[in-house]
Image (cartoon, one colour):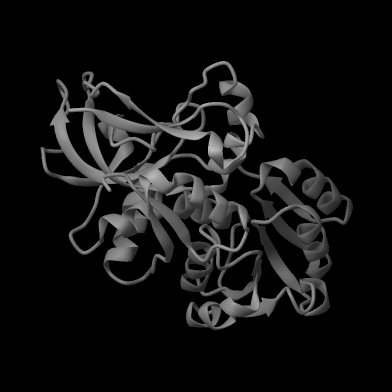
Length: 316
């Protein structure tokens, strides 16, 4: 059997992504081999492919490199002392973050402690949405210490992280506001958020007295959103390229501000999978691309107008 993987051959546009074949992985002690059914595509994958950011800088001498951090699939073999799962178990995980990657693979060796069992009520597609995006959403809200009744503004609420952050904040009984395009206004309302059409007016012209800003956009959009905040508000900014600038400006204005790098936490993923399984959290998938159309999938992310997540079907 062969293991097809998608690699970044050199830094550049979507066309630098290629499919190569490698040997089937063999599990080391404490590892399992996963047959990957779905791999999630995240903005960091696109940024790294373009040669931007920390992961690109650390891997520039290791090309070709296999990107990808979100996987869902089934256990097909277990290494020595790997006892958490049995062959056939359905699992999901946030793997290889941030330097190792590997998720754009048909078969992958993973430490069993990095994986979560997927409940029977959750699809493999839904499970693949959650690892990076769900944990980024949950950790950003935790870092901001969102409390019941607070006014929370989440920039880009319809995106991969945003649609989950909106729902988690609503579940925490916050008063949730979000920015989105006109086509997503109704979608945001179904998730329980007050939606602001950024194509009509910037958030600063529509909203005041915000307690917490969750910035999933960065740049000028985030700088504008700072005008919505009340005294002593808290800011968590996720995009790394503009984090220093946003935090500096926010602190000058008297706000608490911090950037964040998501940390893989299998127990947190267990919780998110449970929430999906019992209907407390809904995953949104814009499109699933067969693995040979990965360039088109990256182009979709680059539009900046993805509702929910984009996945790769790694067995198609």
